[in-house]
Amino acid sequence: MKKYLITGIGGFVGRYFWEYLLIHEPDVQVLGLDMMQKSPWNHPALQYEALNLMDASAIGKVVESFRPDCIIHLASMSSVGQSWKAPAECFNNNTGIFLNLIEAVRCFCPTARVLSIGSSEEYGDYPSEAMPLNENYELHPGNPYAVARVAQEMLSKLYARSYDLDIMMTRSFNHIGPGQREVFVISSFIKQLVSIKKHGVHGKLHVGNINITRDFLDVRDVVDAYWKIINHGKKGEIYNVCSGNGVTLKNIIDKLCNILELHIDIVIDESLIRPTDNLHVIGDNYKLCHNLGWNRKYSMNDTLKDMIDYWRNV
Amino acid sequence: MKKYLITGIGGFVGRYFWEYLLIHEPDVQVLGLDMMQKSPWNHPALQYEALNLMDASAIGKVVESFRPDCIIHLASMSSVGQSWKAPAECFNNNTGIFLNLIEAVRCFCPTARVLSIGSSEEYGDYPSEAMPLNENYELHPGNPYAVARVAQEMLSKLYARSYDLDIMMTRSFNHIGPGQREVFVISSFIKQLVSIKKHGVHGKLHVGNINITRDFLDVRDVVDAYWKIINHGKKGEIYNVCSGNGVTLKNIIDKLCNILELHIDIVIDESLIRPTDNLHVIGDNYKLCHNLGWNRKYSMNDTLKDMIDYWRNV
Image 1 (tube, rainbow over the protein chains, first blue to last red):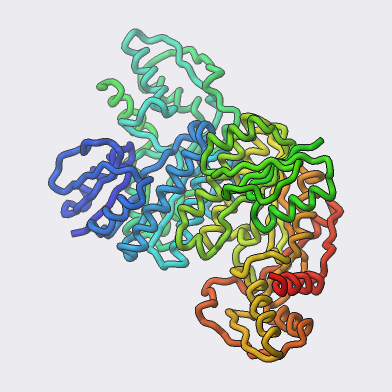
Image 2: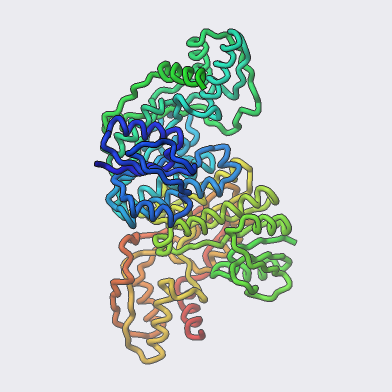
């Protein structure tokens, strides 16, 4: 019976990872950590603790008593916009909490496998002809969140090499899926479009820059990748987690209107345009596919349909 | 009348930078910050405040009221050994305090010139044939302190580019000079040798690995470089601060014994050997010399003689 520690279990990815485990490892025992007081689920396999990972001594006690075999470290303050507003807080809640966790691992369960989540933001701005971004590219982080993730990755490598800890790292690209909050762009589109559809077949969609290209992956494919990495990944290695396909936001809007049979006017809202957004972000998932046998299971259309269903029912 | 803010003014480099300013800019007005309660000097040009840079609001108030033209940010927890023992603390006292300072600059004096100090540790381990290390080399930080410095440098570049702040960066190699504490290797050698000399001409010197090659620069040449960078450096640029010459610790011991006319037995103390020390660290100072007209003024022999005088008189 394997023991998983999941930080940030109440978040978008955390919830899906927990559901994935229940299906793929029915004998699993999970300790979930998050900030909210109440456990997100009542289930005999789940132990939950409300805990702020900034508290090094608390995380030390938890790791010492639970002694996990696998640690999925999902907790993070991952908003780029927020990292410009409060960069020190962003560092504390990415690099700082990672250090608290990894020191606890070093002291109390040095043989545990650890998955440290990073971000495609670490790559920074590359021209379209440099796509897809692979794991050997130089990193040019373009915002404080990205710098904090690069620091976390450098520390992960250091702890793997210096203390022989069993750490794997990801650079995760954009996630989408049912249940994602509307502060994220695709959810925001779908929520608006579902509401337009309810009131007719014509309306206005408020958007930022829809000419940017992104690499979106269904959250259910993301957790499948994370499970494969934590179980079969190689110590000290970094894996892109991405679809390998680039799509413009404009193209996604067209797909959505097609599924919903809608005609809309697109209204550019200047306040939604980020001045420093990269134009093209597409990842190379060869390493993940080739070395770990991962393949995406959800097409973009599947995902969009499921997200539409979600927003129709909330 | 130019106004300098110097953080860590009570440290080894801070004290020399202050003395340098008094000679080269007699009209200067300085606000010195450090942790000790009392000002290190009474001088009409110096205003002193005891302040912990972890206190973002305190540093904000200081920057807002003083509005410096130039900021030399020397404060740091710069021990590699300590960074392994307390990595989170090391991050707070390098990356964290830098963020507090640079956010204060962005809010209250965005036109100030800022010198962000980095370290040769950022380069990490390179083979001897890769020497000298120049500013374009990839960074492979090999300890938590080095990662914190890389993060500080990435943030410096980001603030220079995104907010147009006038930040220059260094990668500073080993400093030596009179007044350096004996926890540093050359001071430790000299203190021991001066004591041996006092009691005769033969004795035992306790050392760690003396076959490592380092690039040592006199602290008085270091502050001259810092002054030239803050006054004539280019925004967003990184400068190695180093002698350009590599010397083994063994070679320095020979020079010292020569100056002191001593014969000694070298005793290897295993507890002083660091398992992960890089064998060769030599910097390339072409950019500093060529672009800013800097040249070292103190030869290794001058520096060693002055350090011997210092340890004879303490």
